Amino acid sequence: MRRLKSIDIFRGLCMMWLFTGHILNWWLRLDDVWLYFSIFFFIDFIGASGFLFVSGISTSLSYNNRKIKAKTSEDYNEKMLRNEYLLRVLFLFIVSILFNIVFGWFWYNKLINIWRWYILLTITFSLLLAWPLLKISKLFRIFIGICIWIFNIFLKEFLLPHEGELNFYGILFYILYHKLRDDPILVFFTFFLIGTVFGDIIFEIIQIENKNERLIILKRKMIFPSLIMAPILITIGVLFKFPEFFILRGSFSWSIYVLGLDIILITILLSIEEYEIVKTEKSYRFLFYFSYYSLSIFIFHYPLALLFYHKISLYYILFYIVLTIIIVGLFMRFLYKRVEGKYSILNWKITFSVKVLVNRMSQNIIRKKRN
Image (cartoon, rainbow, N blue to C red; front, top):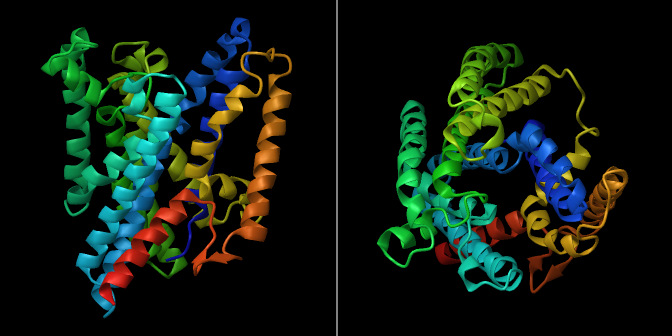
């Protein structure tokens, strides 16, 4: 299956915003932090929500590709597919807990932060919960996702008064939400789940070899439905409890509104790629590095907070951010071009991509077990 540049661009944009947003919040002087919040509400649709959405697309593409391999290959079957998938979940869970220990517990000096819905933990549980749902119809997955959002409205309001209490409801709030400003599973899993729906549609489209036929199916199955569905979602998000869509991250209004924007963005990017409106062979490479090393960037960019913590004014922040992004981008380019896969340790090819490492470990364990 060919690598879709539109997926890498989408994921790269999401990670670049997560990276930029955190630096803005960390480095801006407290008097100027209003700039961060002003930008945040306009661009956050390609933050955690967009990253979960495109992760769902990627998961669906990978799952469908492996499912075909399981049917056509003698060395690979559906049991191996399942075990590989679940091992990947296990390894990501270990990574996410280690991250929470370092940046949740040690960073904030609070043991309770060992369980926080940082994006790594949210992705892990999204993968786990999505596994049995990948086999059901696309419409039913959308229905389940919307039901989860509606259920979340009532459950959060019920549990919120018990925040911090040492009883059943307080513990349940801690498990499901803990910090509402993070990425709680009941809000962000739906982005992942609906992403798998779009992943199924995209997979069906790219399987068509004839370009003219592929473009016809792209229009019928994705462009036209998205042009109808996305504006409706955005309108509902704006009108439902206005202005929650803009100021209350994680609310039902915000979620519906942001989903509409994510759908528009992936449709535009895929259309540009398939219609070859812009030649992306070189122009997308910088974003590709942010996509390829996405989880690694998320994990290792936190120490940058200490560099200029609340010291830079809004007049200079743009220069510092652009310079930092360029340096990080060039460093990732160096890793990818000069180091990635070029050297080995104990027959393991070196990679600095957490995502790639997790996938390789899962595949190698399954293959060794098979042999």
